[in-house]
Amino acid sequence: MANRKQIRARGNVPFSRYFQKLEQGEKVAFARERAMPSDVPGRFQGRTGEIEGKRGRFYIVKIKDSDKEKRFIIDPVHLIKIKQIQK
View 1 (tube, rainbow, N blue to C red):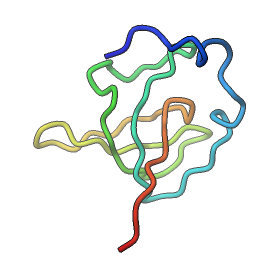
View 2: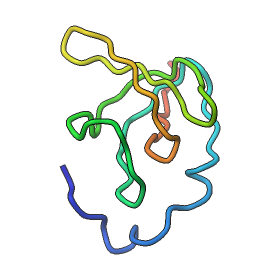
View 3: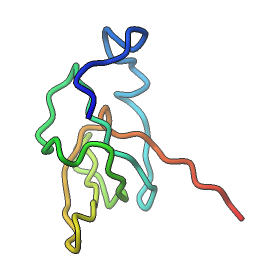
């Protein structure tokens, strides 16, 4: 788990990360943005999940933890959309 950002990534978070639009059912990765507070435990850093819905401006993400599915309410700044390849 990275404790610091790379040099080019330091500074303020781009506005596009704040206002990114995600649809229900899309796959996302949880990547904690160090410049912003997050209530999700650090052990979920890098885990992938599925968007289940929206609550205010935050997203409800379903992440599988060993054999249980857990739901977290996460700010879109901490989410990265995963591109899926169509076959």
